[in-house]
Image 1 (cartoon, rainbow, N blue to C red):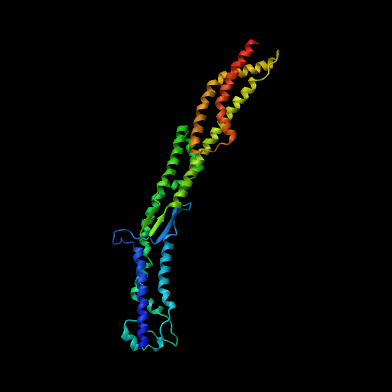
Image 2 (spheres, rainbow, N blue to C red):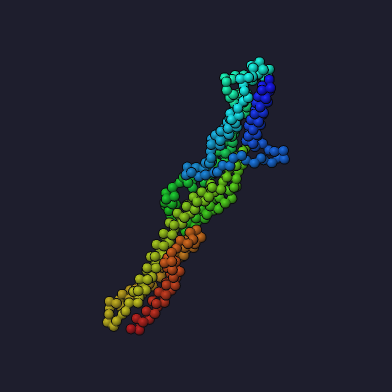
Length: 334
């Protein structure tokens, strides 16, 4: 009887400890408001990540549920490591006297553990069953929160090259280009305002990684469109700079006395400069505007050679006009 008493007491202690542990987990997972009205701290921290197909949770709800189930089973199996008192010496009539509803412990010459008895307790089985689906209630709310990011789905699902071609097919003005780049910049800035964390039940969803990934995507769109604008700007800058350089070289050609070919060449250059002056000066405005846009949305993209060509463009043109007037006067005197 003494052994039966202590065996029973040990069993009750293990049973109570197991129940309390499982109920405590269940209580934490329920995330019910505490007595002071505050929300209990989350039990699981989950990252929101962009995987190229959409926004997902890492770990997933299924992974979290698996961890909860594994934890509940680990608590339950603790009793496997505690050997029972010599169950061979506990008569069946004593067991029935202590608790008629308790599964009988039959020894076979070995002590065994308390696990089989604890695991068969109906209340414990009920809690374990509840824990096996406890986090599923948060799935729909998590899905709803993830759905809120679908407004930016185009960032990772649309083809940038194809969308740029569609944009170019509309024959956009430089103001349209600036507006498009401004839109990308505003989208990028909006991710700085994302709430850093959202608690749903026992989960806390961290948005830091997702915000960074979304910003990377918006920067990719902005940079791609801006680089296309840069190609156009550089092509026009290069063409105009070469025109001015060629004209200056032609004007400075030596004209010897009686050299009709050289004289004709210089005169033709003077004529071309005067004739194209308006056209060339009109070309300055879009080039200047293009680079102003690039300074805002694609800074530090220009190499030294391009930067020098940009800064010297206006002064080289003024120098060409001045040189053409001087050359005209010289040829008139001749």
